[in-house]
Length: 340
Ligand code: 13P
Image 1 (cartoon, rainbow, N blue to C red):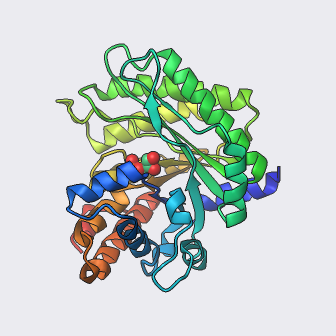
Image 2: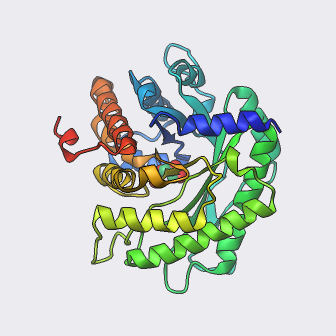
Image 3: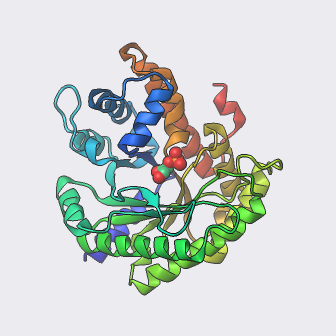
């Protein structure tokens, strides 16, 4: 394990107010988003869409790393350039999603366990050789009546820690993503309780498995009310709750925390990250950044809709979202940026 390489990569991913772009939707997720907009769900349309993203002019000004799906890391642009090379030429480090999806957990109705540990070492070695320098594994925790159970939290935390240890062995920085879903009518306070419990379990397992905290990135949810909760808290209240929860559970040795967007609108994801950095940036041991999927891509996808003539406009929308979140990291994002 090259400890210094891991530490350097992890630090680099959260340096200079840049953030990570998640563009690693699996076949079912990508196809579902395409279907909603009437875009054909074929390999060629997925390739064209990912080409649109990676060739966005200036993306590297705001984006430090991009998380790819296995299909994309092997694909090329129309002119034959590997997607990986386009990214590295733009100064963006390629990363790779390596879990094989959240599956129903046996004996635990409504709960999920992420799969993909079998054979993982060999897959990671291949991705490193291809040029990836970091990886992602997503665990999913659902809030409901009496769930998540401790059995689900512990099993997912252990899988995350085993994945992270394997990543570091081959030189990949693990992004550790325990996502407490926003779906449901639970309050922000309930999300706080669950997120705190999950993060404690995750860091307990990371410690047990000997994961180098300085060479990893945490990708958590923000502490939010459920999408169907009647009380929707202010951005400031969400910022306070999220930072309070993270301060209780995330060791200071971790270099960066990069939030997922999880179904928030693009504007809210920027405003809430901004509120955290305005209120706490100078007092925190870790960088607070973004690793958004939908909150960076959705406006661009809605413009593109599979039409070649819309590529430039869609790229401008992606560039704009990246710029807004770069500003949110500095605490200088304003609603006015959305009108420009
Ligand atoms: P969202 O920002 O759309 O939640 O996606 C982030 C991600 O990588 C989920 O695994």
